[in-house]
Every structure is written in C-alpha cells, then in structure tokens.
Amino acid sequence: MGLEETIHEFNQFCNKLELVIDSFINTYDNLEEKYNDILKKLWSAKSEINLMQSNLQEMKKNKEKNKILFDSCKEIIERIDKIEEMVKSLEIEFLNE
Image (cartoon, rainbow, N blue to C red; front, side, top):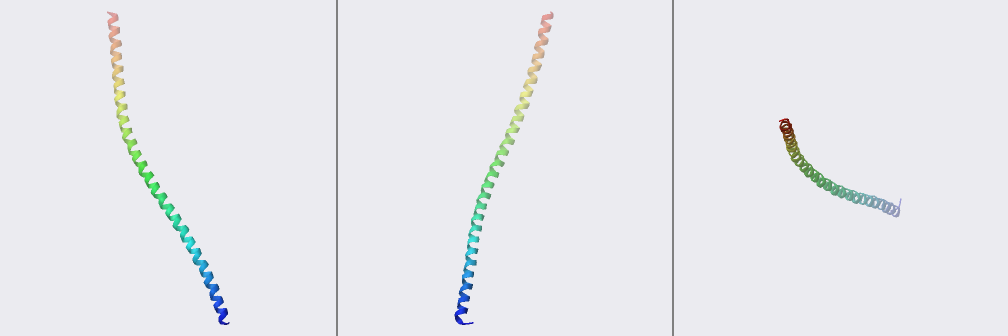
C-alpha cells in the first residue's frame, strides 16, 4: 500500500467522519428544538394549571356563597309558608265568627 492510497483512505475516512459529525449536529439541533418546544409547552401547561387552580378556588368560594344564599332563601320560603298558613288560619277563624 502506497502513501497515496493511505492518504486517499484517510481522506475517505475523514469524509465519512465529517458526515457522521454533520448527522450528530443535525440530530442535536433537532433535539434542541424539540427540547425548547417541550419547555415552552410545559410552561404553558403550568400557567394553564395555575389558572385552573385559581378558577377552582373561585368556584369553591362561589359554591360556599351560593350554599349560604340557598339556605337563607329556603329559610325565608319556610317563614313565608308559615305566615301564609297563619293568615289562612286567621281568615278561617274570622269567617267563622
């Protein structure tokens, strides 16, 4: 094997190595892009989760307020019903006299 053949083989090896390195660089760039996209999506998801947690807390507060209002309305309706019964009773008593 002559010097020229050895140089030629070395050049071919270097060319193959260059292709492998280019492939690694492209793969790295693609992975870096995907990683950055995933990070953006994770931050977005975290933000959405925080917003949902805030909304759930607000809904819980509203639920508690609505429960209090419901109970108050129920009590008022019961009192009105009792008053109506008393009025009917008085009407009947008045009409009977």
